[in-house]
Length: 599
Ligand SMILES: Cc1cc2nc3c(=O)[nH]c(=O)nc-3n(C[C@H](O)[C@H](O)[C@H](O)COP(=O)(O)OP(=O)(O)OC[C@H]3O[C@@H](n4cnc5c(N)ncnc54)[C@H](O)[C@@H]3O)c2cc1C
Image (cartoon, rainbow, N blue to C red; front, side, top):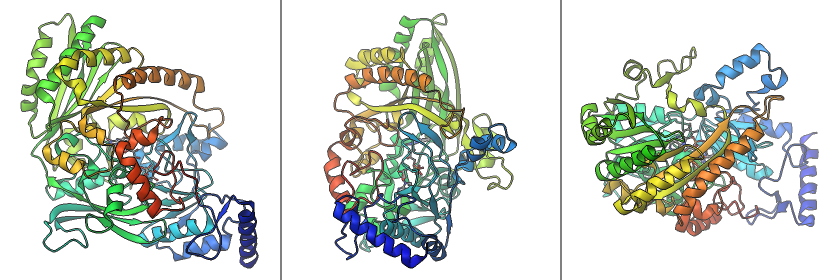
């Protein structure tokens, strides 16, 4: 269809839709009715013509792409060599991120299945992002934003959508003295790192480390540093020492729904700035870059990894009681973090992190607990390893290959940013998986106090009869440093996190993809796993009234999600959402304002 005819058809469609009172809205700032955000799908008269897509492409510094699912060759012929190649690629999180049609997860049972967008702006500049936002708005397209595609709830992909893909924007600069734009000259400068929207944590850690600095980020190397992770809060192994990642945000540059590039910091657009510090990704605009506070790299940071097996149920219950009593009395505080896994078969998995201690010092701190267990070898069997590394070098691939070879997986693809990329082997199980369920709940600090430890152990024991529970000490802030707590209170994440000593995560996943005929996820296995996970979480929920769930690591079906994710901060977040995105251009599942109809 030629352009003139197409524009006429779109106008007629918009008028008809206005008369029908449904699919069109009258913008206050424009005289022509535009389709409602997200209402225009391929095949409808409002869908942009080939010429309009081409015209958008010509304006970009980056590229306009038509993404395809990476699984296409498998959908066509599962036995083909091309499919076999795809299945290998799917095991590499960085390879997935280089494909605009891919996501880290393949779907979530009963919720979403990975889908490639119809078109994507592979953005290289903030102006590319602004062009994409304006184009989506003008045409009423279903807009999605993707950095790494790590979102568990599938919020960075959608069928029949238009994608703004930030992967190619990964410039980084490290500053000694950063003052947010628009702040008075008398403002105290901060050491900082500025990363563009597509940057992964590994890249941010490496750049900061090379200057002797540490920037608090996520545990998983391939998660994005400026996207959904940060905007939803963001926790890493050392969050008890350094705080929630969003609490280190000094400034963001963001394209809002009107297509305008804004700066948000404590001195300009402070309400938007606050909303971006925990209010969730894909909601208030497209962040083009962020500036984050850095800290001196610690001399040492490390992990204790292992397992303690108990002989029988009674010994396991005793093990849990002793561990949580020891944790509360001797470890709970800024130095220690990460998680334990309370397993069904009477085994307690340990992945504890520490900072500012050598491996020997860490071992010394654990000694009283270990010695007590060693006195009863018929009841408890322990295997533990302790590793530590300098906080500026651990991110360097060469260093990690030499000193942490057993724990890391280097990206060995020829030509793929050679000698740079790697990921933790412990994250491998989450690459290209299909979620049956994923649930989380913050545990209040009160449950860790001496008079509640018996109860805490019993409820974790009872829940573990259904499924494994991961108890993340560094995803609550009750034991955080005073500085981390102070900055954390200025974020928009659910305030219950300040009084929570841990986040419990219980999840189940499997293989398969609905995109590949004959290789679908096992729905019956999934339903059974989900029922058991839910039974475990029901026990935790019943013991934690008024608590909540972490928006970035949560259930697609989380009940009462506004309160659960944001608590008392929700009304203010909704008010800011209405102000910056009155028509609901940025919409995603259980994101702020998503309960309101698009206008
Ligand atoms: C293997 C794995 C390990 C993880 N480890 C941790 C961890 O240690 N700590 C932790 O706190 N969380 C962790 N997470 C959860 C993580 O925080 C979420 O998956 C988060 O959504 C990832 O954000 P992203 O930008 O990387 O992903 P994406 O899927 O690209 O984006 C997530 C959301 O943010 C939006 N978004 C992306 N970029 C932008 C942008 N530039 N501007 C505005 N919105 C944007 C998307 O639209 C989407 O809604 C982990 C997840 C995985 C899969």
